[in-house]
Length: 369
Image (tube, rainbow, N blue to C red; front, side, top):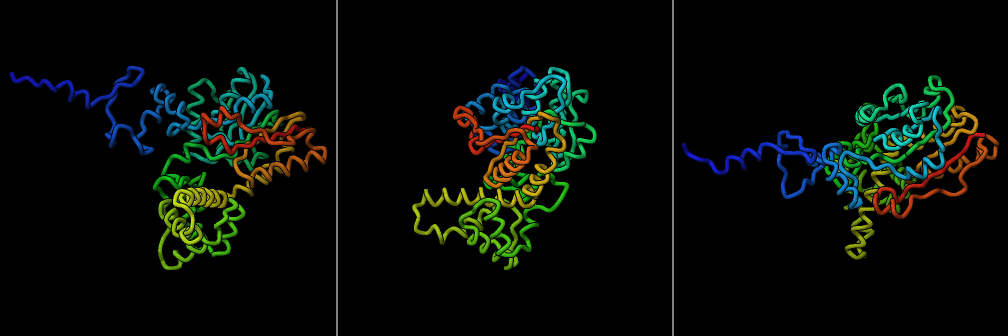
């Protein structure tokens, strides 16, 4: 009988062993020593199986693919002062990190309502929290926009504490199919709820130069708003399409060639990156009506809060922060809030080092009279 000395090696190629000792079929191979694409990072997508890999990614200041690292957890819990038996609301459920920590504070007594418009991530989070022991007896997850908190109030009654994290979750940013990041190729979508409204690609199909310029200025303070708007609208008028993230980035790069012509190469590249970030932000805010939704949420908040109820809101850009600041200040003057933050609370330097996405975070709070 002929021997095959490499038989075991070939068998090993068809299976893979997790760090917890489980055996399963090997996934599709990727180029190089480490996976680069979102879909290839199978270990990061399964944190419960590959804890060492996930810890290593986090220790380097990165966010594992498919995950979201909750920001300012300690500061939020210190302010909310959650007690067993209370009723609370996580207005933006996301990955459920904040919700999990708030649920722990209830110690099995009370209830939390978690809201999200993203059906894709919402079901994953609901299942994840159920597996940790937080089922419908203590947690209710609803597919609803937080602008409609009055509808939740009809079921829940007054809230003792409310948290709203207005940032886009890392799972959404990192997934190229959602179109939130200019760094990866994908459809130019940018909707939080892909079952509703129109994509960013549809939004700019017939947009005028002045409307796009105004959007870029109002939603992201883009200094090259006119140049970008002119390039994008001119390109579309020629009958060309902008349907992917890469196609939009190409137009932004083309638009900034003229104003950045005299700049040093490294400085010019940094400016282009910043303009890409701001342009994507402006489109995301527009297609999701984020300012309108936040305004409605802030107006309804006092009516759903119990006396002494505490509210914490995390914002990530100046437009959001201004709306929250004005609302809290105005309602405090009217005596509706007994107290409100005079200054923003920022994440610690240590947290920003561990999680770069925390750097732009601002927390404001208010207490119902």
